[in-house]
Every structure is written in structure tokens, then in C-alpha cells.
Length: 122
Image 1 (spheres, rainbow, N blue to C red):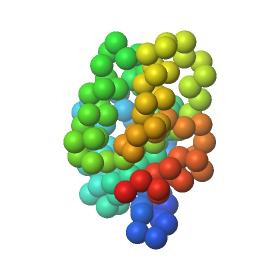
Image 2 (cartoon, one colour):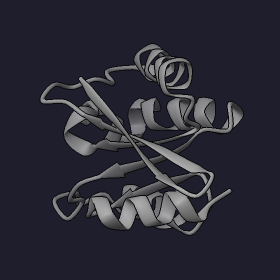
Image 3 (cartoon, rainbow, N blue to C red):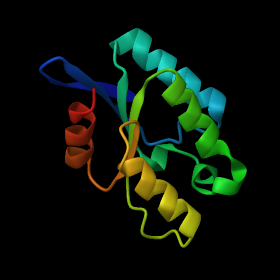
Image 4 (cartoon, helix red, strand yellow):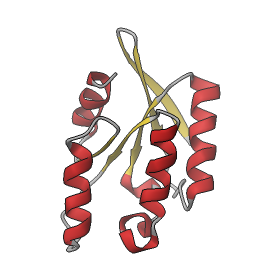
């Protein structure tokens, strides 16, 4: 895993780059969050969809809800970058839509857009 920090003014976003799935479950997500906070002093993270287990995107597993609740509780902003066109689930599409209209978690198609969004939120 490689982490770079994108800085704009006082806003810092940890950009995580890896060829492996980094988040399989809630504990992996918490470990990643703690590592980024400790090593890079960032409360905003950008990760690629390919670094998150596919089970996350099956809302019936509750993995997404559990992980995002932890990130919300710890006030960590998260953008997951990738294509979401291949999912037929209306619940997932609604979940992504609602998340993208909030200020905590974003599901976006491109890194530049994700960085802009993360830097805009407090």
C-alpha cells in the first residue's frame, strides 16, 4: 500500500493506492483509518473501489453500513472511487445517491472529482 497526501490550504486527503483488497470487514476499515490518522494526520481518505471487498456493495451483508457508521462516528470523510454502473440493486443506487448528497461519504467515478469533493467538506 502506498499513501500520498493531497493538500489544499489546511485540507489534507490521504490517497491510498494498492493493487490488493484492503478492506474486507469492519476491523480492516478501522485499522486503515487508524493507520492513516496516525501516520499521515488525515481525517479524509480516498480509496479505490477495487480496494474494497465486493461484499461491501451488497447492502444485505451490512458491511457498508457498519463501516460507514464507524467512519462517521470518528468524523473521517471517505471517497470511494470507481465505476458503479454494473450494479443493478436499486437499494445500492439509492444509498450511493444519498451518500453523494451528504458530507461524509462519496462514491465517485474519478479521482479528481473525489479530491475536489473531499477538500470542499469541513
